[in-house]
Length: 40
Image (cartoon, rainbow, N blue to C red; front, side):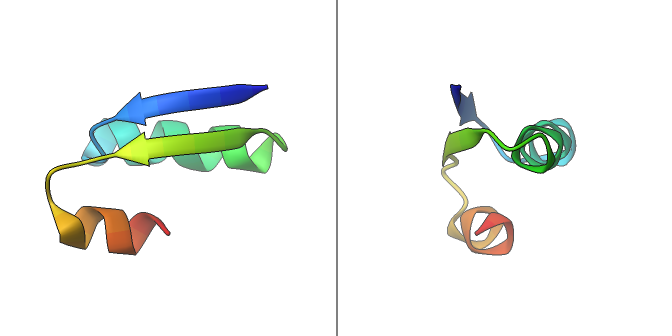
């Protein structure tokens, strides 16, 4: 499964972490480049 996430704030990052831990693919977007770099 592939999931798209818009916004990597507190909630978005938790969603991304859990989906990745479950073995799925994630495409994420955030206007804040620092949030994107932290999530990479």
